[in-house]
Length: 203
Image 1 (cartoon, helix red, strand yellow):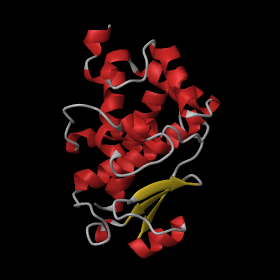
Image 2: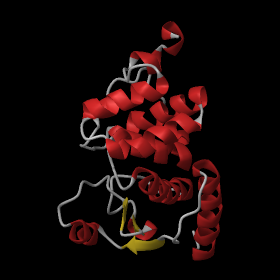
Image 3: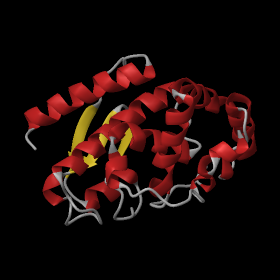
Image 4: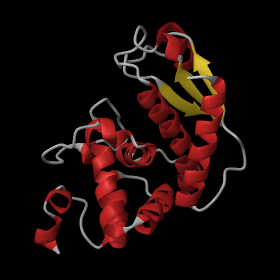
């Protein structure tokens, strides 16, 4: 991927995100390519798992360099997957604005980024969603397996406005129970797996 292609990709992604979220960022995120795992650990201030390849901090997007992507991570490289990673982190920039930098629940933020980045094309759909709700303040590689599909269900069945309302008001919640109550007040059903796996049964 050439730098020009990345610039065009970011421009197109920003336009799509502006349309979805209904606003434009007041800044242009700077993308910083990190050469290796050692540098990632130094920037994060801790030993990171091999699946960690990108994050947002101080209006900057940090990405593991595509040149060492496979050697320094547990991921296989492809242009499509790397493009999805860029879009994923750009989405976080928008979600952070809406939520006031409230990064909980983690499943909601990661799910929105996965859904809007198109990464669901490379994530098999689980037979049942049964663990994403657990990822409230703690993350992990497993959160990426279900959260995108959970958000896709919400958007495809109930539209984006309710989702954005939940995201915006999440900054007013302090606990997982607070968020569950917020979710129920907006969607008019409890935040339970049954409403994602068998929605017609409970309507």
